[in-house]
Image (tube, rainbow, N blue to C red):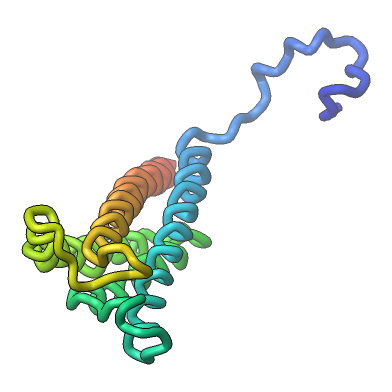
Length: 183
């Protein structure tokens, strides 16, 4: 009987569970890591939508430039950062190792690299803001460089955790394939 709250099978005291099969640890780890990576992909999607909205609003001139500044150069290549997340999602249903590897490598190229370049691109503006208190670009009344540095810090954390969990998931999948080869 499978019910925990229901009646117990006659002739047992409930301590005969050691013989039952258990799910292997790497399968449990795979499920939990996939869940964590999906959460990070959704967080990345939110960041990506914010950057895309800022670019779209600025270029379509939906609001004055006083409210939303023109985008920095790093924001355009960052829009390609959705590609690694899609490869990561495509790798999950069949545990496709090659898609996950492509996702990890392209996350470094299309996600982390534009963020590092952006931090260097915006550094002189941030330095001027810090030293002189002057900002020339604004996003809804806040200094654009301050807002974008905050977004960058969050994005780097999200992408770093995504790569870290993807590596752990890849190791879990390799453990699974090695055990299949042994049999």
